[in-house]
Length: 152
Picture 1: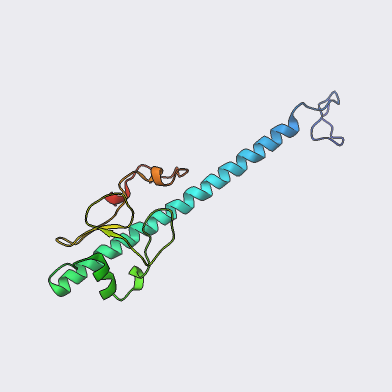
Picture 2: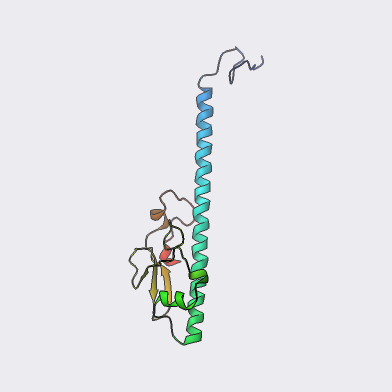
C-alpha cells in the first residue's frame, strides 16, 4: 500500500485524511517561531551585557589613568566624564533596557536606582543594579540571567 497525496495535506493508505494534520503543522510552526524569537532576544540581551562589561572595563582603566596622571581619583564620575572629553563616556548605558544616554546618574551607595555607583576614595565604579539580570529582563534566559550587574 502506498501513501497518496490528493489535494489535502496527508492521506493514509486507505485514502482518508489524517486527523489534525493541519493543526499539528500550525502548532509546530508556531513553536518554531517562538523558539527563534527567544533565541534572537537572548542573543540581543547577551550582546548588550557584553558591551556593558567592556565599557565598565574601559571606564575603570580610564579612572586608573586619571589617578596616575593627577595623583587622585576624580571627585565624581561626572568630573571624570567631563575631563575625558566625551569619547566612550559621552553617552553610556545606565540600565539593561534603555539605549545609551548622556544624562548618567551617579550614586555614592548601591541602591538599585540605575546609573552608576562611584566611590571617589578609591575610584571604584559599578553599575548600580543590585538584583539578578533575570529580574530586569523578564524573558532573558541566557548565561548572565543569574548574575548581579553590580558585581561586574
